[in-house]
Length: 399
Ligand SMILES: Cc1cc2nc3c(=O)[nH]c(=O)nc-3n(C[C@H](O)[C@H](O)[C@H](O)COP(=O)(O)O)c2cc1C
Ligand code: SF4
Image (cartoon, rainbow, N blue to C red; front, side, top):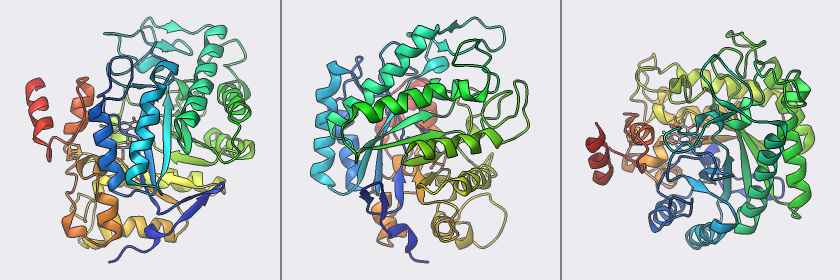
């Protein structure tokens, strides 16, 4: 089987992605303590740029140094802007065509208490957590806006406003968000944070071509989380999330990146593996449901597990279980516009180029062993523990 649909370009606003392969944001945790990219960061992204994705996401970038899920995550503030300018310049030297998207994020509840205090939008359960005041929420909103402006100044093509995996952005959206002020309670209030930030970004970024999208978890799998109908609901109900993506589109957002799950509770929902191959059809299904609601481009997730067909999905026809087959088929059927690649791009940064050039036999396939995720969980620099000895050693030192 040959690559066809995935090699077609697609316009987003006035910009063109040269192919349908998107490298998803994947944290590297290799910056300076203040969030400044290091030479290691630059080298990682140069490799990725050489791999020729159509859209290249720069991993989760914190909009403030005040909360951080990992100690050496990216932080984009005035003080670190020069590093992000250099990052874009170095990527562009190698790859002029890929659209560069910065993922903007705020760790919120997922901030690591070992070094930064977690903060939340509302109290969940009984474990004490700092709940932000209305003024602090507005400050966080302004930090998202300032960070988007800095991303634009750094030369990015656009930003991805992260509202997924249990970070601050999606904490607002939860039906369980019972705040009494204008950021909690009814659906309108729960979507206010995003809309206020989004409108301010458009106003302050004086570039009509700048892209603003958002990564969402339409179903988080926690009581009262995204994709449920009420504060204690666990059963999947995408009514609100379907409505929300339509609202985002009506506001002028440029793309939706569909993931799933809640990082602190159920990583399997976002990371299909041998233990949970059903994660693949579930992610494809959620993506299709979101795609049904909007006309803007939709990016899908969960493809790495498929590999060249060696996986635990039911069936004997290897080709029909492969990443390439499902990528081609999902685009053909109109169920997705872009194929998002996470772990496979960590395992082989040149994956996109090889797949598009029909050099599948040269791909270093991700085994979905979980090694990179274990590094992340241990607050270490992240890379592939199967194909890069340096990261095998780091993992051995913590296990
Ligand atoms: C090591 C690692 C780091 C990740 N970092 C991010 C991140 O910064 N932002 C994000 O939205 N998702 C992040 N993810 C999730 C990926 O973007 C992607 O959704 C996930 O790996 C599933 O896609 P895959 O099956 O192609 O790997 C990360 C995943 C891994 C394994
Ligand atoms: S460490 Fe394992 S899961 Fe992560 S990219 Fe490498 S092979 Fe894939």
